[in-house]
Image (cartoon, rainbow, N blue to C red; front, side):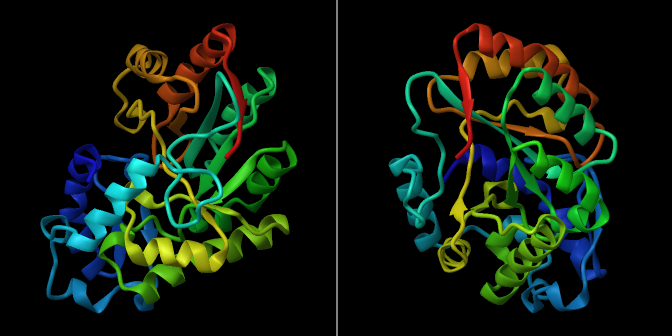
Length: 275
């Protein structure tokens, strides 16, 4: 499987312990967004966490590893609901921008302003709890013509959860997005890029395309504006799906980087599409 994503999930040791206490708290943020606390109703906490309090130490099953390997070998072909999408396929120099972990009352409006300025359409992967807290922002994103993807209710690592909890996390987020916008999401992004057979089956059952990414500038770690910009410009090519964040913590560096990288990408001849 992708070793980078496995490393980023290692901090879930703390998260597994937190789940036992009845809430989810992410430490300094790894794969997606910065530290945030989401209340998780008791019925969403899987019983197996009691006997396995350190989910990051448990390897994926062989079938799960094989499924992810097949997914990456297919590179996320559009229209294949059984495999995550890692690239878009809309022609030469077409790329996609995805914005995760919001909406945020502070940063989502800033990101929307930049997208409007440069006439860029993006996909916002939203957490159900944040959707529930900021329905007006969700409507503003939809009204501006951007896509909204389901990013689960509470941003848990679904690879370690039972199929019933996976279904609950996904359906509650869908319900929140539908309540706010009147639209049912057709895209799903797994927190941490953690795909499992149960998650992929649920995507197919719910009619959502599993959406991954191919360019990760690690903006969640706040490496500096220059580092974010440099990473994106070095690694973006035709078909790239770029991962950025408007939620989960301090996203000032992300906003500053977007101010630089959006016009640079456009000047380089790239045009934005949505999955």
